[in-house]
Length: 274
Image 1: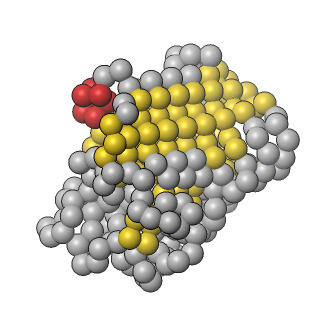
Image 2 (image 1 turned 90 degrees about the vertical axis):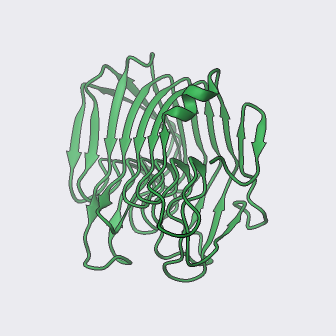
Image 3 (image 1 turned 30 degrees about the vertical axis):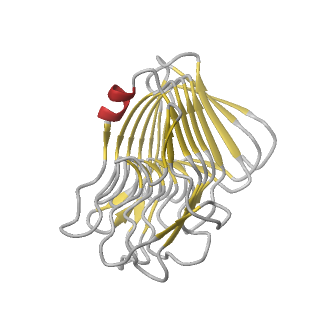
């Protein structure tokens, strides 16, 4: 998709590719309409459904009985800084900037590409060393799993962390949805990846994370961050990833600070939700 507002219907669709993203949205404001339970979109070496900067993708069903599974892949280039891992739904690989994602009235299973002990992409959000725009989830059932060091919903693992845009996500807004989110190693379930310095200054930019739910206890019980490090700050359920040797800087998306934090049912957690 390069532009316009096309309607795309997936009904018992099995799309599995190598050599690029399974669905590649480089521009425009398309809507993917999900029909039925047997819909899979996967790439072995890129993002399952890729949304480039400037585009807005909407994924919706007739109800949460309609289901879509999206899976990202990876390319092993022989070193941790050069490997690339795609998101399930989000930015293409290669440190590129992603657009906005809207998910509503549908069931989504999204898994980021991953190389064990190296890195991975978010289930929904950015690929490794990529960015993501705003993520909006409304009246949906979502199961998301981040790759190694990546958040399930939010930012993928970031090796080339510097003053570039490569460590940035927009606002995450989740409303009246059943979310099961599992962060990768040392990463938050929702929000930031493993937040340690790899290359350059450890600076991360993100929008506010806002969650509205009728049952906060049940919502939180379905979130799982990655394991804690032996030393340093452990990953939060919603917010920051683990870090030890360096203390990262967390800013708003425009570079001002500090990061706006998390709001759950109107209660603010300025430093993230443990």
